Image (cartoon, rainbow, N blue to C red):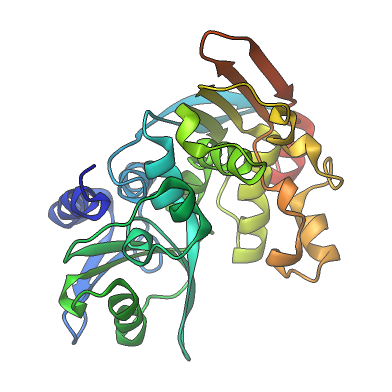
Length: 310
C-alpha cells in the first residue's frame, strides 16, 4: 500500500493552489511549517470542507453532497464512501491526536497519525507509514504556531518544513462538513471496538446532514454530534457474520434520545466523559458477503430540528 501521507500531500498541494477559490488562507511559519486556515480567519466553505475530507482520508474516500429536507428546512447532506475503510477511516480520518502545547490545543486527524502509529487502530490494521512530508487536520478555534508544528514534526519524525497543519473550528462551515463526513468512520470504529476485525470490512459508506454553523464551539460540537447520532446513516459490506452488529448504532447507548448539549452539560462539558457508545451513527445496514443483510437503529428528525434550531 502506498504512503497515506504521500497521497494526502498531493491534495494539500491542490488546496495551496486554489486558496482563493476555496476561501481559505495559507502562510509559512518561521520554522518552515505551513499552516492552512480553513475557517479561523478565512470563511472556507462546502467545497473546502469536501477537499479537507479528502485530505483527512488520504484520497482513499470519495465525498459528495446533496440536499434533503429536515423539518421545514432544506439542509445540505454529505456522503462519503471508501473501499479502503481500515486505512482511510481508522488509520487516517479518525481524530486521534490531541495536539497540545502551552499556548495551543487542538484535535488532530489525518495521515500524520500514521507516521506515529501508536494508537490501537494501527495495531489492529498492521499499518505504519513512512514519508518526509505530512498533513494533520486540526480542529481548533485558533491558528497553530511554531510550537505545535514542532510537536508534530518531533512525533512524526519529519522536518518542520515538511509539516502542513490544516486548521478549522468546529463552529465553521468546514467543521460542519468534515464532521458530517465521519459517519462511515464512526461505524467502522464502533465495529472494531466491538471486537470485529477492521480488515474484514470491505467497503464503508455514510451520509449525514451538515448542521447550521453554531455561534460558539461547545454548541457546534453538540450539533455536529447530533447530526451523526440522530441523522447519520451508514452502510458496511463485510466478510464475516458477527453477533454484535446491533452495537454499532447510537441506539445502543443508555443516553440515546437526548441532545448532545444536554449530555455534555451533565458531564460539565468534559467531552471525553460522555458515553462512547453515543458517538455512533443513527442507522447502519450491514451486508455480509454471501450472507444476510442486517439493519439497525433509527433516525430522529425531531431531535435534529431541535438541535439545528429549525
